[in-house]
Length: 373
Image (cartoon, rainbow, N blue to C red):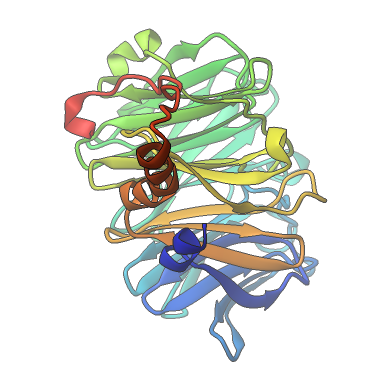
């Protein structure tokens, strides 16, 4: 275990949790932390000696965005970053974009008043980030795609009570794949001219889930089912066949609680990594590469809160997991999960060689296409 800790050290971000942390990302040689102190939204650059606020969205006297994991996001592109948040002007809701050069712009929502305060935000990753704003009206849900210049497209979704947990991915053909766990797991494929195609991906109750797309245009969905205590995943190379998705068990004995993002999935080239906070093990943080067998026991997140912070980032060379222990933020960087598995298995291999004892076969992990191994 000491060898593993030396090879994959835990690094503390020098910041005290005086306000809830919602996002942590590495950008170049700096760490960016998004917090929600009172009615502010702050992006701070943190280094070993100082914490510098580089962007601030003050909502004093303005429409107050909901403090939820679905109200803002931070996107990093090498040394540049974008911050996107719900938060309008005066009493009207809107979406604000802030760039790493300090420039910012706000686009107002067409849905005024109290209904607009229920809006959710999903940032669509890309070279220039876009945002998907979802706002219920009296009988449906209005979805708007926006970028720095303003509204691009809009859709009317059939369900007013769509807003529970949602994720969205921009597809290579220009459509947007919007997932919601309202009544199972549903896919809404948003196309041009207001076209919406709905597909039921899973009938069963999904408590927590996340979605990512890789360089080949394949979607990976990861989901936690508390009723069966299973962590599941499915690959969707063709969204027209999403209803026939083949779900595989990543890990058994997994539960997720709370309203934060307790499960994450990111892509790195054609590879997917997933991390989750396992409430069934006292909020242990676990990590895996979806195309291989080992599950990494990363660290102990705060056992005192229902839903501790969890972040996951892949940059082409490393995969980094972020979490909090209730007082501080920590990160652990893994350059090679297969190397971790080798070090983890080394003591057992030495013991087997010395004693001749054979360990039982590990639990089957599931099947994945050879191209994703």
